[in-house]
Length: 193
Image (tube, rainbow, N blue to C red; front, side, top):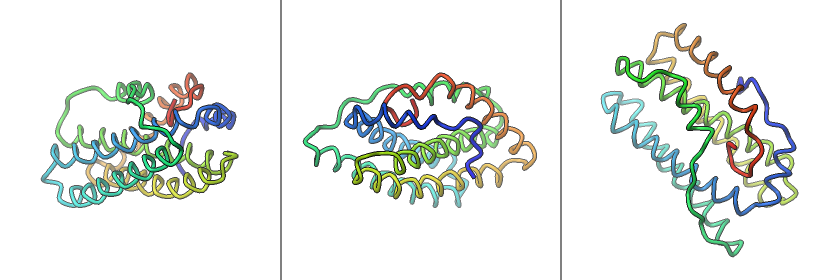
């Protein structure tokens, strides 16, 4: 369903289990960044009313996810650690050239967002199925469903605003590029790493 070209090695969950505090901190900041992305789309493209409406709802949802993760961190007696760079996202956003029309820029940002949500969904599925910590497994199953709807929403908007064949071609090329990035990741207890 997600179209990812390179699935995550299930052994990644073993890395995560060795440092649950780290994955929860990273996850909390991923939710904050998703919120920021939605706000940025509103600020940058206010004339796309249907997108703005969806992004308003997404901001609320992503901040509620942040609170849920933060609450889990506090329940376990930890505090939210510091944010760190997301190598996955930093590499991913190099794919499309800068510039182009406003519509092209919007489509590229929507495709990036769709792919990030798809990879998060895939990772959350693995966590929900493989984690020994049943509370966390249940938590990630719930979030996996949410991430899947975000992925389809962003991809749908890209296809709505861009020329369909062009968007579909770019999407496949981006998926191929992302698979190359993923070959070097999956070795750390981060959502995308």
